[in-house]
Image (cartoon, rainbow over all chains, first blue to last red; front, side, top):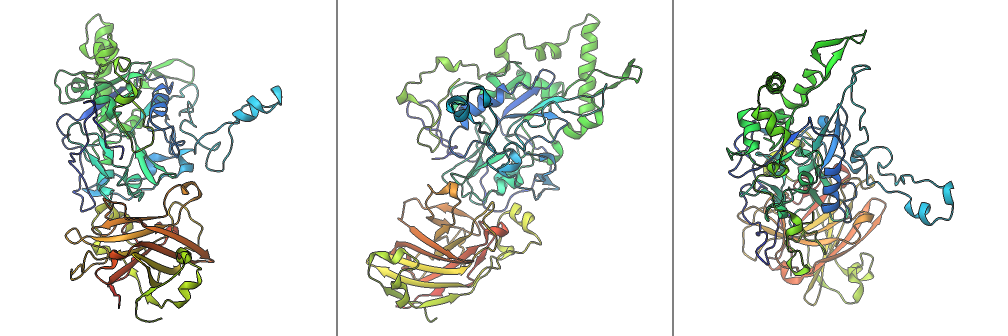
Length: 394
Length: 206
């Protein structure tokens, strides 16, 4: 049974059988963002609140990728921008759609992801050498110690005193036009109609890895031990019982909105469609991402004499445009305008929304506390085609 | 070399590619051609492989034997010159669904899928995985697992670049008395619908 098969022994989690997009045959090309299916699960990350703590990354890692062949997999990870990120140089690896046709991409290797980091715990803790041995990564010759999921953290760009950086949490975009689904020859990948989550039936996956080539965000990993590709499943077993994905719920900065952009009362709808301050990453890739970002505002640049250049933000707008497209300028202007309004004593529903006074306002209908779920062994809600699948843990 | 027939062999060791029993089994040389690019069903695969050479492997030396209700196929060919990278060398034996069925394409179509026994060279980290599986092919690379485990197994040996693989499975797979062959060169990133295949079915005499 694959990752796309939620089981439902006690009514928690429904079997995933409906497929809106399967392939193995001619793909319909997509050049634009298109229309997401009704109920499409969507996330908005407010980059002005992300502090790069990687709690989201670890929450995901602990829950989903601790088994054999998954050591190098970080379905959720936070890149520092500007930077090469992980896999190394992913933004230049191709893939996506152009003029309605899929674009050839590079299949990132385990080395480019940085391998699976391992440390000399045994030697340090039990080696009998006392303080003479220090904790260090072990080089297995597979990229470890030469790259990693946050290797270039905090390097950023610019020159002192105008150096700058910001954090960019990245996960599968569960795209409206998922080129990975179209590229899968065996039809193992699909986008389920109830919430638009892109999944893979691991029992069907033959390990061809065209999905990894085609994904322009390079957020699909290969499990060499099991000969299947794997990627973020949007914590669908949690969604099915009303629990927000682990990355969102564990975020200390409380910056991750979860819900449906079509729900006109939801903050996501307002951020994406009404105020248009939440934008997809690299919209030019043509896949219609359903992960959106509120772009980072920046302090003003400093002149050589350290006086403030009020007119020029430290993060070059053209750099942000290279990430989020030309709409980023209007989004930043809207944010600046709302800030000015509040500074002048006014009120801003937009800023109130982004502040998030009540934590659960982030999660729409996914506010169930996982600690309240019945998780006795005979009520484990999901199997992943493994001998011991993870449960809907916190 | 001669016409392809099925020879009865004795002994427990016939799954071993070097078993002496294979010396008494007549082999046939099966020529291969690249899986036609125009037949590629997947738009991404077409985009990614436009202008790239593939399917240069072959021919394959094929011999068939039987032991009771088991069919054994011994396949030999020149494999990758390079050590395995991201993708491994592989070989498959295709079977049309039943006697009398047209099934004009050895790699199957959506309307007329075919069965295949697939062997893949495994990386050291993949030793827990079976080296052989039975799949259904409904076109180039459109492979899905059979609903039931057919008990296909394999053993392999390599001498220089030459692979010799023995695939074994149920004798009834040969009901149509025809087989096809495909080979994938892992060092050329060949997999799924990108490989070399026999252009026509090879008839199996009685």
